[in-house]
Structures are given as C-alpha cells and as structure tokens.
Image (cartoon, rainbow, N blue to C red; front, side, top):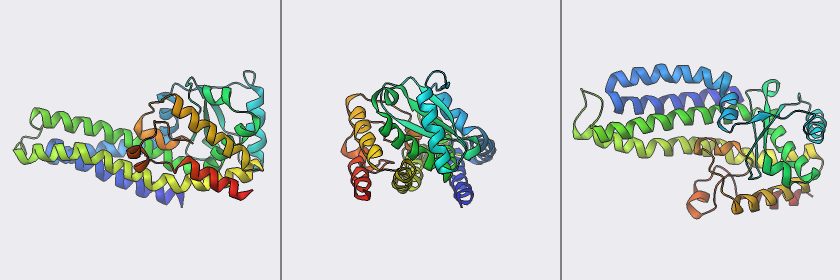
Length: 279
C-alpha cells in the first residue's frame, strides 16, 4: 500500500511541476518540467534519504562515540522486528529527530545534538521507538520522497517569481495574463505542496506515537520527551527547511496561529494526552 501511495504522490507532484513549467515557458516548459520530474522521481526514490541528511549536515554516529544510543537502537529494533537503522547526529541545539530511507533495510535515524543532551534514557527510548515505527511501516518512503519533490517545487516557484518579474520567459505567452498566472503559481504552488504534506503527516504521527509506545513498552517516556522537545523548540528557534518539516517528530518552528493552522504535525498537547490515556 505504501508503494501505491508513493506512486500517487509522485504523480501529483509531477503535475504540479508541469503546471509551473507551462506558466514559466509555455509548451516547452511542460516538456522540460516533465523530464525534470522523471529524473527527480528516480532520484527521490533512491537518494532522498542522502539528500535530506546532507541538508542538515548529519554525520554518522559511531558506536564508540555513544555506545548507549547504539544499545538502545539495537534493543528497540529487535523488538520492532526490523534491522537496526544507521544512526546519524546533526549539530543542532534544538531537541528533535527524524527517520529517513525508502525501506527498513535502507533506513537512517537522525538525532539532533540538543536531543541527545536533553533527554534521559526512557525519553530517548520513546523518541527512537516512534521513529522505528515510521521505518517499520515504511512511512519514511513517502515522507522523504515528499521532502525531495517539495524542494523541487519550491525551486520551480522561485523560477516562476523571477519569470513574473522579468515579464515571463515564454515567447508564446508573454502577455499580462501570463504574468498574472506566474504570480498566481508562485503563491499557490507552495500551498499545494503543503497540502500534500498535510495529507500524509498528521495521521501518521498519531499512529507512530501509539505504535512507538508499544515498542518502547510504555507511553510515558515518549509523552515526557514530546513535552521536553516542545519546550525546547519554543526557547530556541530552529529554521528547518519548510519542505522537510514534516519529517521531524516535533514541528521545528515557532508556535503561532497560522503555523498551527497549516502545521504538518498534530498539537503536542493532544499527542501527549492520547499517549497518557494509553496508560
């Protein structure tokens, strides 16, 4: 089922890119956008995990550097009945984490330095179990492909904005209607990409919380970890790329009404409430 959903997602993202291409360069833009989309689809499937890890300068965490984390990952992976993922760390002071990879055999778990320094062992178990749940149920395939394709859409939007400023790149469609169309796509294409992210993320976070608590053996560690991470994100702003925010266990941005309205994550308070009701 995850492969079908991923295929549908790639089709939707491809059409968005082709729409942007048509407004930037007319019929030729559609052809170019289609070719680019096909290349990106392949790259997104095979290399999206490496792209995302590179975006955050994540480096492999050796077992000698932190044997405790490796011990926890191996223990919980055995409980979840999946291979232990590769473990990475990124030098970000804000506590957060994400998992990436197209399947359990090619998965990676990335922890921020702030998370490792802040959480105790039980809280860390809760976070890792949550991410292992994403890996086990192949949520990471859809989530990382979405991140890569959303990045491509954002690049195309920047092109559309410059085309609107310069009067449009298409000789066939250089009238005022084309300029208005370019301005419209520069506004609505990111919203369309965000809607796709919203569609795949919120329900998956609730499910991963529940399954993660089962893997960890208790919901309390994850509940406390979510509260700690929420406070950490409030104290220190982490400007993660918008197209990758849905990957993180807690939305890495400042809380406000608009951010919550269009958030790819359910409210932390609601997640904690659901977890504690399990106990």
